[in-house]
Length: 348
Image (cartoon, rainbow, N blue to C red; front, top):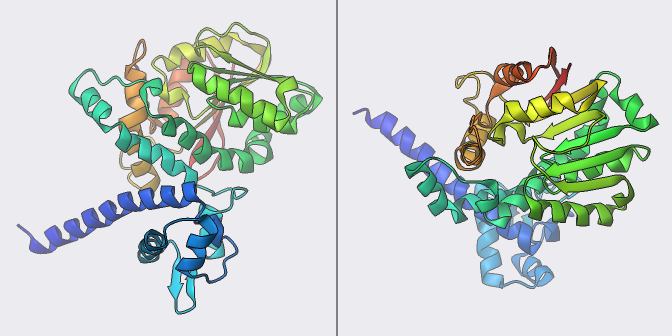
């Protein structure tokens, strides 16, 4: 036994345990508006934060101390302060790195832990719809800032000739659309185009319809509860899969259906979690996050459906390319990327 190595490992484990507890603290701050009460980056007392949010002073002080110990807020004689950088991640909804609401997805994994354990002990199956509703909202709000920042400014322009079609008036499918964040962002930018969102989870489709109405784009967006292999529409200029193909039981079947649905010069865009092609490539903070989420959410969902190919969230470009080739696509490339996503383009 190497005592030094043991202590180092225990230190890492305790650090991660603290990190897990801090995700609960972030969720508390997000739900109660505690971070937003500090968004001006001015020093503030615990009394003032508690008063602004109408929360229990003693609990707010303890929450602030936890955040200070974690480095999520600053603490000095003048009080507690959320720096501009911290505010971008924790308080500013317009920020491209506003990740605080994503802790809802983390919370759902703990809420659903008995279901996850049953899946591990059994056939591995746990469908998306069986999870707590915090997963659906947390996933939407985790990905939406990145979509808002990059989708129309970088990702779509990276596809060959697609922006010109969207500006002129294109027909677009968003397969696995969830709450419709990606669909609505595209519809808000390209007013001459028509957008069709499909998702197997009917409650999410209902939310997407409400979101479209709130955003004022319901006249050019249609959301339908349908599986990725059965939506009837054809003649699309662009078919999108946002962070969902790897979750599907039969991604080859979904891709094959997409192969039949576009115009001859249409494109398929896959937005997938950033991943290399090996465990070694993915042994980093982003890979750790995605492997863990995949163990509890993505892979069990795939195993709950027919075929159950179980790609997982870290499938990687090579494996995804093989899926698209098996579906019939002859051209496949990485169009662009972010630290969290691969943006891949497939053509007939």
